[in-house]
Length: 123
Image (cartoon, rainbow, N blue to C red; front, side, top):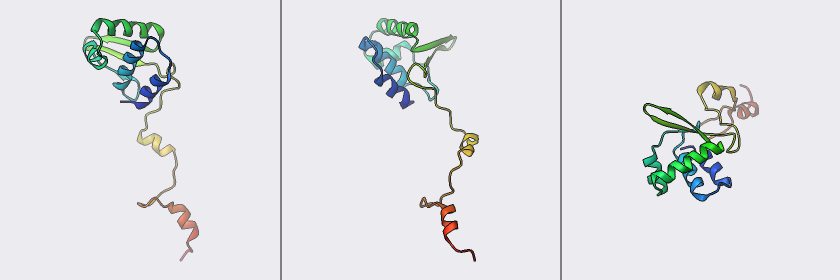
């Protein structure tokens, strides 16, 4: 679950409330990129709505641009629109991107080792 999508849905004024509930159910099942794969039966269970009502709300959310969908043989993939929900998608942290953010080396207690080296006399 990507909590940032859940928080973004909660922060937006989406009417009617059932539509917001369906979008919230999709956001709760989304990965960090905003992709989710729930069936209408799962969304129906999550929202306590009939499958027909879920279908109506999903179609309205698609028409309003809150999400997009891709239909394949294995099912429907929904993608939440991060820019519509308030911001760009967060980049995924990989070992390469972690190396780009230079942080001071720290020991197990969290002490800044470079600052310690500057303060201690050289032997």
